[in-house]
Length: 138
Image 1: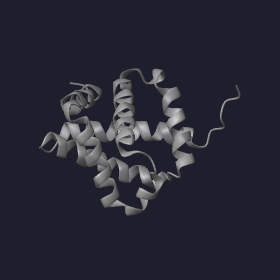
Image 2: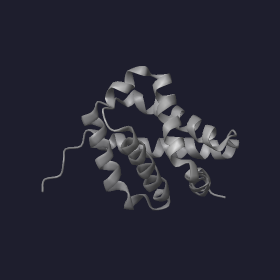
Image 3: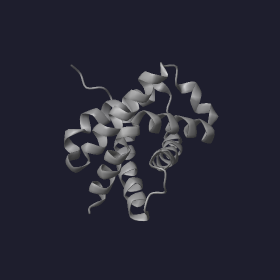
Image 4: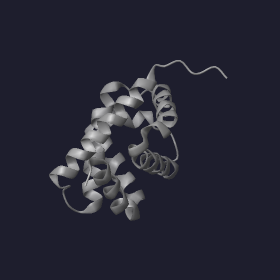
């Protein structure tokens, strides 16, 4: 199974617990770096839904990345506006892996874990590339 397929399959497996996974993600994120909580002032139910919807869109688009690049670019721009710094992405990556494993109830197999790390690095590199790009004139 390809790395993309492993990541997509994991997301399918965790999807019945999507809200709990998002809740676990934010819980772990704030445990790892309590200062990040100040970046969030939204309704938590809505924030968790946005997180899972965005994660689903990005993971489903991994095998056709060009289709999600506009969304990735916009996500990067929004993250800058929210105050996200480059070093926050590593913390979020650790929280994401933890939340996936917590929600599934078992550690990810090594190949699947490596696939998630690779996909996360690819996506966050693309997100950060959009961080400082000027907005397109309309």
